[in-house]
Structures are given as structure tokens and as C-alpha cells.
Image 1 (cartoon, rainbow, N blue to C red):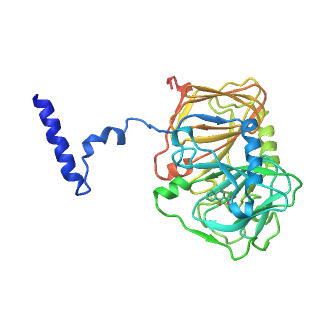
Image 2: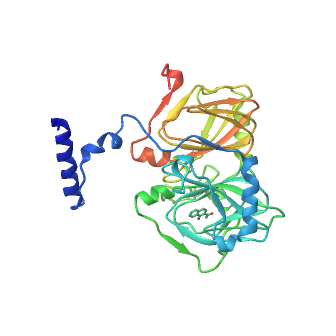
Image 3: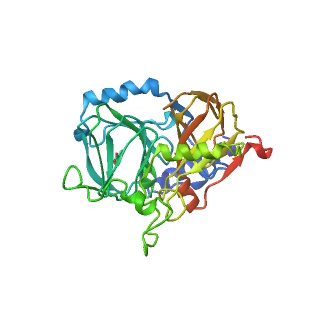
Length: 351
Ligand code: 1HN
């Protein structure tokens, strides 16, 4: 037997011996743990809304919102099947509420956002205030805020949910409580939080409280108008077009402690330079048509399509028509942990 194979035998025996003591050799896994750049099992993927819409609506035939608590079809990354996640750190799903239904009130440690895809007349109530939903609106339910959903509408309402479930799992820090009643009482008028915090003022004497925004509804009409006003200036970023971060007006920082949300406009025929960053990002098409090249995959984009760009995977976008994209990621958490990095393809780097 060669010296090398003898040594392997000795090692295998050693590993078996220490295994009984719940110990393992670092050197066998070291290079997979600490990599020179991010490696993720998540892969680029696109859920074309035309393909999945019917399944979401058919979920309404198999279970009620009340029984399901939340009637959601989870968008599972093909590289992470069975793990209830779209990236390693974030969960996403498509939730359905039908007329007259209620998704009962609860609160939990997880941060959640909703991006409304279709429907009218549904609402989310957050800590006593209702926000009515329209296509393209962003609604937040920050950690430990009571929230329930309901609909007075005529047809189905569907939205994209984004939560930091895997992050909370990593920290083993999950708490969930049910509200004593199915729907929480309305203790504030709709628009109350916007009146207090959403007009470049804040209540006199009120100090910033925490890392979550006190404004929890960001209507499509507002941000679209802002984008249209700004586009006249034509100061396009070569990697992002015209991109805005939704902020917590108390801090100027991202909307929630772990999740950041963005919207961007690319004018017709605009093509971005490749770009990558450490925050795996979920995008959905608000308006327009185009194409996304994500790593070595190509996605044709039409309204309400959802695609995922894993960490450190390059993204290049093309707008066939004026293209408006909403996106969210864990950038908020990564920046707090001093982890976030980016690389721009227009700096001469090849991505
Ligand atoms: C949740 O609370 C909602 O409030 C949606 O709509 C999806 C997935 C896992 C855990 C809690 C919601 C969720 C969730």
C-alpha cells in the first residue's frame, strides 16, 4: 500500500473516532465554507405570471384563506427545492384573497412586504390602520406588527409576499402570536401613518423608534409620478437606469431592518451594463416589456413576471418598452453586518 493511501486510511479512522464525540475535521470542508467569492446553491429563475396565475387562482378552490391562515403558493428557487425560499436568505410567495375572505390577524418576528399584482378592494390592516391595495402598491408589515388581510372587492386579489424567514431561522429567533379576534379593530383612519410620517414631517417630539418604517403603504401612483418627473433629466445610471430606494422616513434608511425595496425605470430601448452584488434580489415587472440576462440565463419579461437574481450573479437588463421593475433584497441586513458588496460592469470589470 502506498504511503499516501495509508495516510488516507489513518485519517478515515481518525474521523470515525472523533465522530463519536461530535467533532469533525475542519480541513475537509474549509474550502467550501470560506470561498474567495460568494457561491450559492440558488439559481436564476423566472416565474412567468401567465404560466402560474391559474394555479394561484385554483388554490382558492382547494382551501379557504381562513383555513390556510395564509393561502400562498411559495416560489421555491429550483436550486433550493423543499427549503421554502427563493434565495438563501429570503422567502417569496404569491398570496390569494377572494371577496369576503379574511386572513386572520397575527404578528411575528419576521419582516414582510407585499407587492400588489392584481385586484382591487382588498386591504392589509397594520397595527389598527388599513391600507387598501391597488396594483403596483408596496405594503409593509414590519416585525411584530399585528396584521391581517381582507377583501371587499369583486374579484380575486393576488400579491407577491417577501419575508426574511430564512434569516430569522438562522438566528433561531422566531415568535408568532395570534390576535384574539380574526380581524383587528380599526383604531386609526386609513392614511393616518402617511399623514404623520409621509409628508416630510414627523409628530413633534417623536424620536426615531426603530429600524422599520412607520409608513407602511407606498402607492404606485406616488412613485410612478416621481419616476416620470425625474426621467425628464435623463441622468440614467448605466447599470440601473433610474433607480430609487423606498425609505423609512424616520431614518432615511431602508424600509425594514432586514429587507430593502427598490423601484427602477428603464426607458424604451435602454440596455444596462452588467452588474452584480451580494444581495440576491427578487424582481417583478410592474410595467412594460423587456429582457433580463441573469448569469447565463435569458428571460423575456412581461408584466407581473417574477425573477430572481442570486447573490453575485450578473444582471443585465434591456427595455423593449418603458420598463418599470420593483425589487427587494436582504441588502438592509447585509449593510448592517458590513457584508454588502457590488461590482459594476461599466468600471471595465468583466462580470
Ligand atoms: C405571513 O404572515 C404572511 O401575513 C404571508 O400575509 C406569508 C409566510 C410564512 C409566515 C408568515 C402574511 C407568510 C407569513
